Length: 107
Length: 121
Image (cartoon, rainbow over all chains, first blue to last red; front, side, top):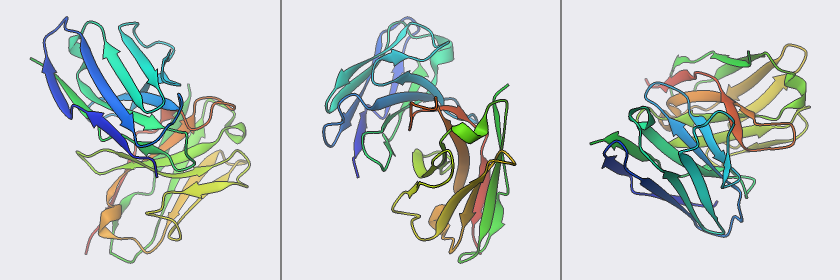
C-alpha cells in the first residue's frame, strides 16, 4: 500500500494567516492526489482534486500544488469557517489511502 | 438534490454479521462507481471497498478482504456492504461515497452522513 504522511498533525493560526499543510507519498503518485476538509460531526468535503484543481464552490483561498511524492495544500488567508481536519488521499494505487489528517484551529 | 443515506448500523458481537445499505437519490446511480469509507470516531479516514457501475468489478482494503462484500442493486438505487466475521477493530462510522464523475474515479465528491457500527460483546 502507498503510505501518505501529513504534517503537521495539528496547527493553530490566526485569522488572515497563510496556512500550509504538506502530504508526502511513500512512492511516486504523479498528480493522483485529492484534499478533503472535514468539520466535526460532518462527512468530508472535497476541496482539491488531481493535486491542484479547485472543486466547484470551494473558495479561491484554497489551493493545491505538487507532484510525484510531495504535495501542499495552502489556505492563503485563514478564515474562522476553515477550522476542521484536512486529509490528503492518493488514488494512484488500486488500494486507496488517506493521510492521517491535519487539525486546523484558530489562535 | 444528490443524496446518499446509509442505514443498517448498530451493535453487533464479535464474529457476527451486519449488512449496511446506502440509498442513493438525485442522480443516475447506475453509471457511478461507489465506495465505502470508514472512520473510527476521532481518528482518520480509511477506504474500505469500491464497486464499479455495473457491479462486475470490486476491490477491498486488505483489512476487510474475505470478510466484507460490496454489492449494488441498480434497480433499487442502493449500495450494500455485507460485513461478516466482525472484529472490534471494525468499529467505526461507515460512509457511503460516490465518485466525482463517471470518468473521474476514486475522487469522492458526495458522501452520506454515515452509519455507526459497534462491534462489542
